Image (cartoon, rainbow, N blue to C red):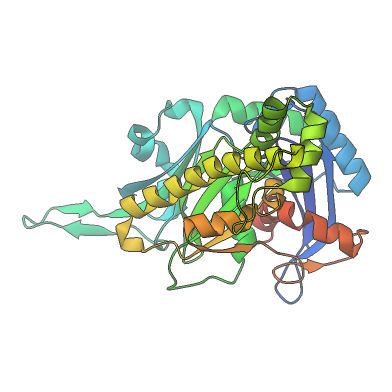
Length: 369
């Protein structure tokens, strides 16, 4: 059976998951590994220090004993545009051949400087469809899609770093789409209200709203775990390492606890982290409200599924659920959507990586479809 590697280049680490198609349908995790990146090597999803990232990828492949072929690479940064567009009702094949002609007016970059792709919404057409007006003139109808436009220079630079590490990339995919693929797989909730997936990384938060198991809305928020650490360094005058440890230890205020209740360093830290969390929650609320205002026929988002390294912050998930007034569940893939093979990781290690698995796993699943 095929072996596919999903590569997730994040702000704080590079992560990779090796998957194999399972006999019972669910993919099998064969290997997983991650290597930390120094601050500044990747900023906002873009590689700033190519040689540093290349070396980290090479170390990751060596440590995790990963194959260098059949790699699917994820994209997530501000030089990627994702938006819904109505285009002529062509088949997928015909639309792919002429996509630039139909979406050029909807993307803020020249078509010849963009890498374009699309995700069908509301089903796939098998053949061209047309309509006839009152005068008997045939015109094409329309179909909704999510168009993805990535700046070609950024894509080329990213590929150059990965290929310099000796890897053979077979596809690039939006990290947001990988999240949806990992979370739902073959378990598509048809006819249910829309749901949201929120992945909180070190430098970026991705908000993906889904309906019938498909992404229908995407927003990338330049706000993540680093903002919490920086808030502590500035507010308490401590260094980044101390702030990181303090952040993980105290977390935000529990939803039923009084705020501003003490003068200790931990109390001050909790106040600072809570104020920062409230800003992130407001960003997520804005995304949900924007979706509700532009797609009122879709219904209210019924559930939020949370993942990402920064989602581990104590009490953050409960606070988010309360103030967004929405049911919230952590994304857990292992043992449910993904079988665990002989990874070489202990049960404790597997539990620790659950929040950061979805992107790498979803990218690998692209090649197993």
